Length: 161
Image (cartoon, rainbow, N blue to C red; front, side, top):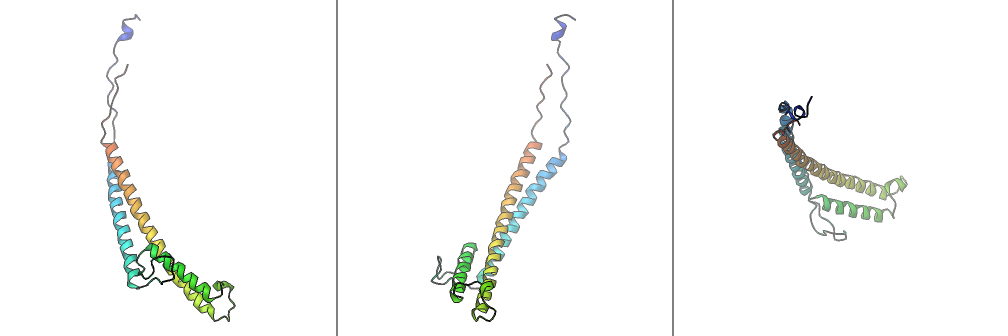
């Protein structure tokens, strides 16, 4: 073999076969799923807000914030739950339901306060789940878009040397 033959060009490499149909399908499904997650998150947020508003709960004047306003969202629900706890502890002399004797007259009041707080905290969690669903929807759309972009990118084949 001479020096001249070592510089011969190799046959051109063929582009690798790419089967990207499934990647495109996953990308499209990600976008569709993301849109649905955002819609469901918005519907859940509106549903919880509608139910809280229908209860016509007004935050008392001795609350830490939003005095006199109606409970219509997660922050006002938190403030209302806090002031309910404050009032219940005041009625029980600083004792929780579990600490009160069974024959204590304040026990029923503290129990009802506990139920009300639990309901308000449930609405706060529902808001969090709705926000999480919408956030995951945004991520699903971004990932779906990225999959579609990558699947349609041209293949660059470097010639063999």
